[in-house]
Image (cartoon, rainbow, N blue to C red; front, side, top):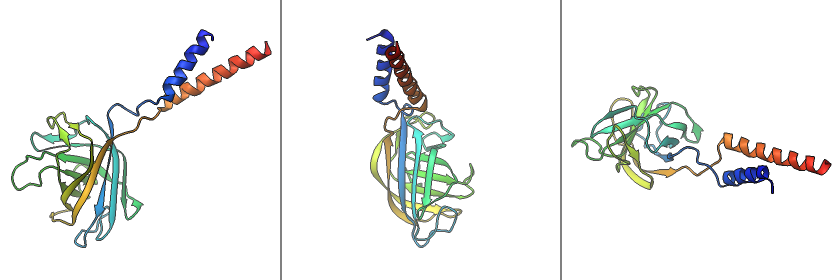
Length: 201
């Protein structure tokens, strides 16, 4: 086997094992069913089923934070559905510290719709703390089916209207990147060309 063919074979074999989409990329999924008291907005309605999925880094870039209380970040590849129909407009996600002051929800998460001021409304849910480290530099944990309670969607006053749900945070499966696939196809083409020249010689 020639050095060129050996090198190309090694490249193809290494790519076949799969390369990560990005180091520490997470896939977050959650959802629930709104009760009859839920306000009607672009992202909520009484009795409607909602689902949400998005990507984030396990060490996200923090958009805002208050030490000991929460941090927010901008999710990517967001898919939010209401009764099966996709609805855009989720702006940011908040993860809350489980030891915040008495009277607050404590732990869990919040979804901010519309813009940075959440002018389209917010969804709040109390639950576990989904991260470790300080709010200025958090590391998001992986969890499976973590139950949250006191879910509420509101534009002004908050009250429970989606009492229970689950959230799952998992590591994204390894997949080849586009640049890697291009390298594979280029290597395969070179091998085919080399064989063709050898056969015609």
